Length: 602
Ligand SMILES: Nc1ncnc2c1ncn2[C@@H]1O[C@H](COP(=O)(O)OP(=O)(O)OP(=O)(O)O)[C@@H](O)[C@H]1O
Ligand SMILES: [Mg+2]
Image 1 (spheres, rainbow, N blue to C red):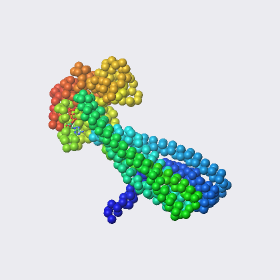
Image 2: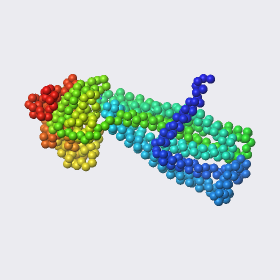
Image 3: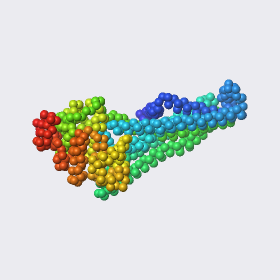
Image 4: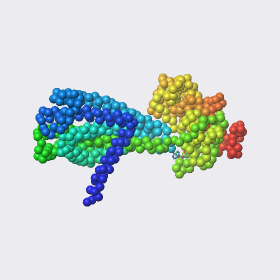
């Protein structure tokens, strides 16, 4: 005997256990109490169905006097006597009608409850996923394809609850089948054996189709994810693609993706539909064999055959949807597993913010002996940098030398591999990093505005911000004139990523956003590079005035001469180190705040 044949039952058993494990895993998405309510309710509903449909047997037995149904009808007769009902056709019919009505009522209540749970499961998963993305380590976050995250937090997360809904449908059908099986067993053991045999044959013959549907489901999901990631990337960088006439290649790529997705979707749906469509002939053939066997080997009376056919057909009518729902379940479960895998991965890369100290920034930020690199690529080597509070520090240096990296270290988006970042006397990692960041105003090198009004872009939807405060910030950022020139003023919608504004205007909106909250430290990473010299000079001077009036500390990464002019200290980054290039007079002016080693360097 070949290994494959020998291992087939083992493989089936393993699949069955894995399937059961999957069921339990999905059921664990709700609390034990909710599980009890749902399963208990479904059980009650099945009992009520049995009271309805099952009563047909004693009814027929009473009418025909078939001996095979005697046992069951005797039991029911006793039950009727116990509750004081006469064992007559009209009473049985009343029980049938009441049973079926109550079953419908319980069924509706349970489904309503399950629908609520489904919504809650999807909502909780979505919240957990979005929260984990917002709290992920920066280095991990920027390594993730954006479209994949968008797709995951949207439609994929919303579909999670579907697993639970399918499981409840399967449980409901299984419970009903079990009760009908019990009834069958009470009638005749041969009938029970027959039903079990037909069930095994039915599930066995569709195993391959379920497996196919599952594999096609996986392929389809993977293609959808690739498409979401690549399409989002293309849309973000679309202007350049469009302007250089390269849309054709992208159109081809997305057309190919659409074709592949349609193919896997078709295969996925077809595998499921095959199973559904083939079910009836398969059941029919099995039933025909069953009846033939019952007629010739079991010598039953015609009434008994009628009763048994009813029971058989009813049981199989319940088992059929189980088979169909199993295909749907596995596809939804695979989706759930892939998404919960992503969630676990993101959660395992949560930002470690162990520090709890309240940040105090009165004197200076000091970078001491910082070494940092991305992977194998070293960027900063034993770098020292001193940023005195209440002053403007300008940072210059060639492109790619590590200026933005220094900024990222100061706002704790990255941690140094050695050395430390000091805020006054405290190491940054011992501080409550969230609080520290809330005291920072930051204008990044790449500015993206939200597709919303200028007001919301500056206030970032924070409650309690007034139009007056936004106006002040816009004025300080040199943005007020062009904002008021628009018919809708601060209520002007800026378009997707701010595309209705010029580059320089976007920069000024972003500066207004950074200074609105009166930060202690303002970081400007090439924040004025898109501006004409006059506007830039105006902003530099306004920010210098802010420094003098409010004690604001400014760190300006820039190549522009104007920043060097207004700065109290100027550093040049070279070979992974910071060199102070300020004039001796400037250094003397702030020498009280300078650390001795910095003075030596100067
Ligand atoms: N996430 C990253 N992973 C790998 N390498 C990175 C990453 N971010 C930056 N780098 C590399 O680190 C070096 C420093 O980058 P950084 O952005 O700090 O330069 P920069 O001085 O700000 O340059 P620019 O003036 O062009 O903005 C560059 O060589 C860059 O390619
Ligand atoms: Mg940079």
